[in-house]
Length: 205
Image (tube, helix red, strand yellow):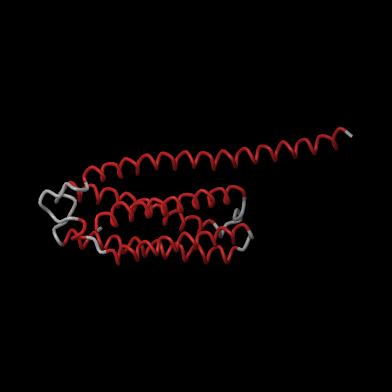
C-alpha cells in the first residue's frame, strides 16, 4: 500500500517540477524581451532627437522609397502569420506541416533582410551613408539593429528546424524553445511596425 500511495505523490511532484521549469523558461525570456524593449526605446529616442539634423544632407523624404519599405513590411508581417501556422502544427504534433511553415517563415524573413541590405547599399552608393549626418547615423543604427535581430531569428529558425529531426522533437524542452522563438519573432514584427511608422512614414509625410 505504501508503494501505491507513493506513486501518485511522486507523479504529482514531477508534474509540478515540469510546470515550474516551463514557467521559468518562458518568464525568463519575457525578461530578455523587456531588456530589448529598453534597447530599441533608446534607439527610437535617439532618432527622435536626430531626425531633423541633416547637416545640409538629404532628408528622409528625399531618400526613402515607401514602396520598397512597404514590401519589406508585407514580407515580415506575412512571416509572422506563417510562424503562427507553424506553432499550430507543432501543437498538433504535425512535424511535416511545422517544418513547411517554418521554412516559409525563414524564406520570408530572408527576403526582408535582402531588401533591407539592398536599401542600405543604395543609400550608401548615393552618398547617404551613416557618416553623412546625425539623422542618417541614427537611422542606420536603429534599422540595422533590427536587421541584426532578424538575422539572429533566422539562425534560430534554422537551428529549430534541424533539431526537429531528432528524437526530442515535440518534447517539453523543444516546445519551450519554439515558444520563445515565436515570442521573439512576433516582437520583431511589432518593432518593425514602429520603425515603419516613426522612421519611414513620418519622415516622408
